[in-house]
Length: 417
Image 1 (spheres, one colour):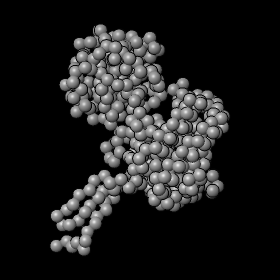
Image 2: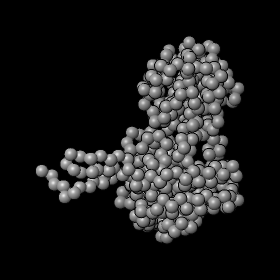
Image 3: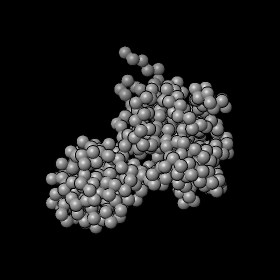
């Protein structure tokens, strides 16, 4: 490995090794990839004490940096969360291998037989902040899809990510796959991020996972294509026909289960007809749970400012507003949303149909908590991120979304007239 202080040389070497590994991994059998992931899962569980010790160093670093409680929660690992990492690796392992799948096939009058077949993207660069579990999620999904991956974790999760990465490498070795298929940038130097964004010759796509600052930087400066969501400004609209018990439980879960994740609800919209009854009950529930409700048209903790709408709080705070009807709710989401996840709470089938049709976000839900905006909860085992753009992948990005495709065309001496 090159001198870690010479960042351009270091990243060039990592990129070249990733590209060579990707060429080999693209043709690896489903059985060998499965074996690598199972061995990695076993290694994570066997070495859980090492991982928790490494995480303790990161937690201390986070405390010294003054991270918020929500960010510290993202960073923290315990045996239960490590079990979640193991379960995620095993779930990805057991999924159908997407590489080589026929997406569509058809015959042409010319005599040609055409198939569109899934292929790996190549080399994926993942830039993430405090969540050390992303190391396992990203490594597993990229491996499953036949891609090499370059992982650049945040300074906060430096030690945890290194310990988890070592388990992934152990899995690759056990399956006789190239160790360079999953590489981790071994420095906290921010120059490595800038370098990755320019690696057009070796990285095929960048996936940033983190806050607005990181994702905005990547989207502005990357010369490599990007799968990203800038923010998770998730809305919950409580319609006039909402079931009170369902609505109260769902809103409380959507906001308070984990406030620091991108699926946490950041804005509550309430139909005017129920503002003084169910709407106010929900606001009171939130306040009782310790949430600061910045309200307009409801009795909240404080009066909402214009700037509260369209804000990703990632904290025990939520904006709340009364709307005249479903169309005003949809218009509000269109103006202030980030195309991530929105939910409608109602028992009116026509309202659901209108909301589903007219809200153009990556994930749209009915009578369910926005906290389900997660690849694991979608049956993907894990996710590499939630994409809110409209090109290639959208919503949770799992193994299938980390593939491209090619056309296989078969003739029989067929000539074009």
